[in-house]
Image (cartoon, rainbow, N blue to C red; front, top):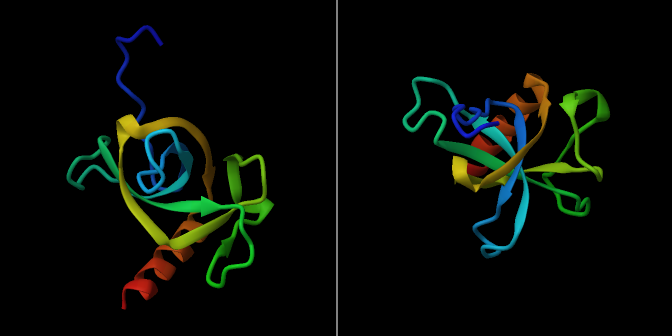
Length: 117
């Protein structure tokens, strides 16, 4: 990029790697983008996301089967943490890591909604 191109807009189902506001400025982790569409406020500037973890001992985590990766991936087997929701800013994202199939993203959204009831 020469600096003249617009920043990429991340879409629902993208896995991005970026700042973790709960662990300080130097910590970063993978995030699953849940909500991003043109009608949403701050489209392309702010994203609703849930975190991923490599932990496997917690109840309620959502496994990411290898076949659910449409592109990309994580270096270690990861799981979605549906209660680890955060609004992250575009400038806090370091890079795009991959994309998950929509059925798994829908499952994460449903699990988040269950957490909120």
